[in-house]
Amino acid sequence: MAVDAQPGIVRLIRQDAPGWRPADGACPTCIGQYAMRLAARRSPTSLHTATEPHTTFPYYHLDEETALSQPQRLPDYAPITGAGVTIAFLDSGYYPHPDLAQDGVWPSDPPLWAKLGADALRRQLECAPLRLVEYVDLTDGGEEIGLHLPSLWDGAGASWHGQMTTTLAAGNGLLSGGLFRGYAPQAQLLPIKIGASNGRIPEAAILAGLRWLLRDDNWLRYNVRVVNIAVGGDYDEPWYNNLVCLAAEELSNRGVLLCAAAGNSGRRLLYAPAQAPSVLTVGGYEDANRRWSPTRPEEVAALALYHHNSGRVLAHGRWAQKPELLALGRWLPAPILPPSAVFAEVYAIGELRRVLFENRPGAAGRPAEDGLLDEWMFDVWEVVRKRMNAHKWVHPYYQHVDGTSVAVAQVSATAAQMFAANPSLTGAEVKALLLGAALPLPHHPHEQTGSGLLQPAMAVAAALRAGNGPLAGRPYSSAQPTPGELQKWVRQGRVTASEMGDPTGNGETQPVYFGHYAPDAAGVSVVGSWNGWQPGVHRLRPAGHGWHHGLFFLPPGRHAYRFWLTDSAAQRPLWRPDPENPMRLEGGYGEDHSLVEVS
Image (cartoon, rainbow, N blue to C red; front, side, top):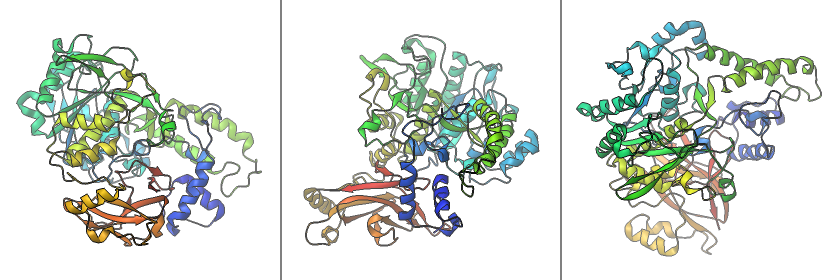
């Protein structure tokens, strides 16, 4: 099988086998061993100060000098993409970036865009199927509607912020080969441009955006279930005296979930609509661009807080603390504006960096003692690094971004997934499920953390099981039931009596329940370290509503696994980690393996 391994893994394999290519394939066990070697070589402290000039982001291995993606930081429920749900955005401007394409296919290569110019690029973008259901321009007190409007295509400075929020929430990562995707890569978008033509966004402009959604039930017309607000008002006043907050409450009462950024000043102060009781106010945390697991307390304790605003509001006779939820607030990859001069420069920087990197002493194919490039490489590297830092480079088409505007986009995207998973939910119910699934951060003050850290995968899993959800009453995947629970599951029809027999007959194995939500799959198998990663050995049986499940007895130990999906419409089978299991193990691929520990 061809290998979609991480670049650092590919380089390690080529050091041992110079003629090897990813198309030649390799077994998952072998790739996993190389992943362990790569992990062992990571520095315990960041290498960003090991270069001069320093990089603007931390990293821990020379072959991993980039920013981790959203799913690598906070794993999501990837099978659910937000399809059929619209997220409305209130922001200063937008641009129809290719990461917002409908089908993930683009008619030309990005390196050509700088040569084409802004007008030619626009003609290509207009011919491509985008996921923008409409575009609304409310700047300077006016109102214009249509995807043809010049303000959507001008690429002005104010356009970047809205491009950032929309692609962080719903980008498919097209220009990164899918790596830097958002959590809702098939959600529909309704961008609403608010503010003044000089780029300032007064509180009255936020009110205009909310009132437009309320007027004539425009929110319902475009199937808006989530509103993302990454801007704040002007006044510090109680929410019940603030027109923006009152409009937000009215929209919330209609079943829409409003998600607002808490602000970035680090003060005990909230501006509208962040202090509205029903609005989900989002702060940020920092992970130092390092892999971590919610199942390891020492790694959770190392997470730091972003300098977000906070406060409390009085609602229904009780004080509520805000922000209520945190999401990643630093070093998130976001696309650069394609029609900008920065886009062309950053791409050129990336190409020059690649050539220098591949020809450095000690690189694959070059002996470590070969210092022929040393005399001039330092001078070139210094110039390249300064330009990389100026644009916060992490990829030829992406830069790293920070702020509570970044954090709130992740929460809005997860909410869109939850509505797609269970359309019967209201905004208030989705908010409650998000907070219920959050990871507490007890080492930080509660007034700064609220319920804790966003857990996208577990929130969506909860939505699938809430109310009339398709998986109501189903156990979570990777559960290890007790004998009493097994008997109950048999009575409830969750498993069959034939699945309950220990194949060893001596009690040396333990039952593990696996399930995967895949409505479009023709068949699903569990492949893992215990069965040699062989599809079809442990098949899951369809249980209705897109759920495939099975009970298998595994020997004691740590077992890496994935689900293997076959679909007549797919060109090749898919294999996915278990979104309902927070335990992960680096396997060397774009996504980590899932991990189950059997005692």
